Image 1 (tube, rainbow, N blue to C red):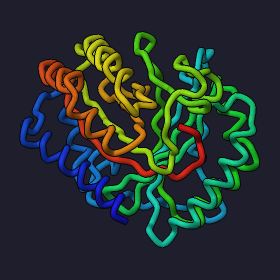
Image 2: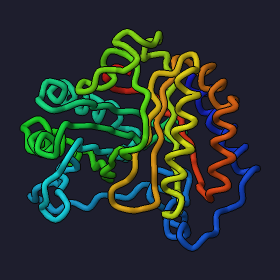
Image 3: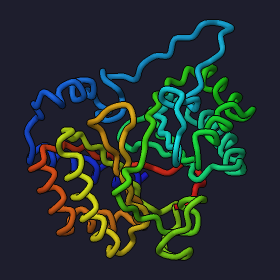
Image 4: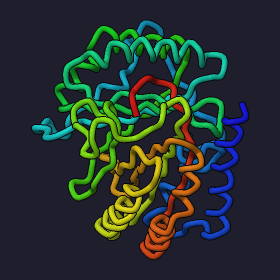
Length: 300
């Protein structure tokens, strides 16, 4: 409980500092995105004070969050990356986690799965964030139509769990830090299989969402990449990655994992993060942060 309070307190402190340093964004390119993000969950609700209520048709086939169509039926090259936001009523948390863990046990054995993870946001009592990477869209499609995935989908329907899917990709010119033996089952860590020290039960996880004008994309990646070089030298840094959304040209996600909350504090107080903030401000890139609590067994 004390650790959860500390995580929420740090998240709140960082957000208060951001609010004091920046005005409510007003550019026309950002207004539609910012308007839909109002409410206590900010970057995760999709608008309004409470998560959406799913509408069911008795006897109908439930929608599948893992069934993602390739654009225009063309050939998909490279990884298939998917983030899913689940909105779970507090009384269903335990049953939802049990259902997800059963799915996780099956997914990690399937061909082509590289990452499959679930985390809980610490500043609310209903949002969970699922993240997966597959070697190809075909591998993701095989997962989506597996018996285990279909059983999971039916459990979501029974619990009235609402969800929202966000297809992602890794910018070709963005680097990445992924230490540890199993952070990505498809890509060996360039820092060595035994890099990193922490046990994931004590780690600290941070998600930062960026809204950037289309004209700033190249400079945003460059600024983030320069910060990455500083993060590589930090004590306790294990994962630091950048992803771009596929279905718009404004939103980005940066995810990081550190061995401890002390390491996170040092990260946000570092010169390279301060330089990143300054550069993002000049580029008119706005951001929002949340702390996460790990649920699944995916190594970090």
